[in-house]
Image (cartoon, rainbow, N blue to C red; front, side, top):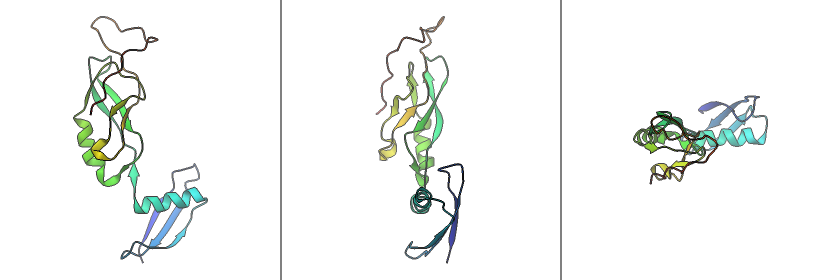
Length: 142
């Protein structure tokens, strides 16, 4: 019977979870090594539906910086990571951008939004606007 070793990342303990399962019907026969219910749930989720939060950058037009850090609001299924990255690579936003602003809604019809990780001010040639003033928000790319 095959097994999968998973290190839980939910707390600093880093429990080493071992899951034995039947390949034919994906039924779990034995789970060991978890230290709490959250670890057990994490191990089962990682076995059946692994996902990852994507962090990357997108291009900024007319901004104080050329790149904006972004992340998905929650985990993307692992089998969609590369298609999602391809979609993100085509995004360019117009400054100004506010931290937490939705940059792209519903990436690849997953229901997961792409979120700005910092403020980017608009660059007007000679000087930047007052950082204490809130600038107009960039539009959400549909």
